[in-house]
Each structure stands twice: as C-alpha cells, then as structure tokens.
Length: 195
Figure 1 (cartoon, one colour):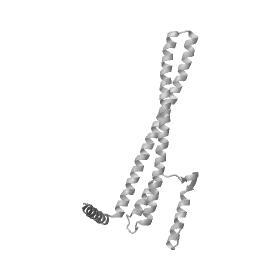
Figure 2 (figure 1 turned 30 degrees about the horizontal axis):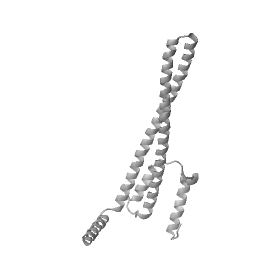
Figure 3 (figure 1 turned 90 degrees about the horizontal axis):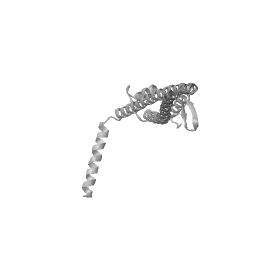
C-alpha cells in the first residue's frame, strides 16, 4: 500500500511540475499583484465609509448636545414659572436625549477603534504589496513591454501614498530618499557588487 501511495504522490508531483511549466509565471505574478491592489482598494473604500459614518455620528453628537442645552434652559424656565406638567414632559425629553447621546458616544468609540484598526491593516498590506513588487522587479525578466515589472510600477504609482512612509521606530523616509537609495542599489548590482 505504501508503494502505491508513493507512486500517486510522484505522479501528482509530475503533473504539478508540468502545469507549473505550462503556466506563465509572469502572468500569474501580474494577476496576484492586481488582486492585492483590488483588495487594498476595497479596504480603502471601506475606510472611507468608516470615516463618513464617524462624521455623521459626530454631527449627531453635536446636534444632541445642542438640544440638551436647549432643554436645560426650558427646564429652568418651567421651574421659574412653576409649570410642573410641562416640566415633567421636558424631563422626559431630556432623559431621551441623554440616552441617545450615550448610545452615540458608544458608537463613536467603537467606530474610532475600527477606523484605527482598518488604517493599520491597509498600511500593513500596502507595505507587503510594495515588498512583493520590489521582489518582482528583481526576479522576473523585464524584457516584455507588459511585464510584471511595468504592472508593479503602475500599481505602486497608482497607490495612495503620502510623501513619506513611516517605519518602525517612527522614522519617516521620503519617497525621494527611497528612490535615490534604490538607484544606488541597482547601480551597485549592475557593477557586480552587492548593496
């Protein structure tokens, strides 16, 4: 039985090796980069929705706080005039607005945590994509016009990046510094040296 299993594994390995040769590795790499960029675009859209939701919640918070201030003035007026029935109704409105405000505060807190988490996920995946693109530049031949290198370049140039990136330790590095260092590394590599 063990021999049959070994023969099956060898046969499957040979089939997979043939498929790997038939498939175009460059096309697979380009597709993988596109899919990673699409996933990042989807997450950025989700982040924009999160931001709009937070803005809406903060508007609701401001409106509710404003209404509570008006109700507080109405209560003082009711006490001054001695209208107990109207004061009772106003207290009911006040309690309803206070409960609403507490719920809004809870939703804002949760929304801000999610926004922060989603921002960190995007930053991490953007870094991973950039790393893969850099590796693709080194390992995939760039003789064709529509090579993985050109796709990688277009993906990175279309990505929404700031003028500088943050790295561990809070260090900021500008895109110009990165590009100059990359040129130096390529130049050293072309001369046959290691960077």
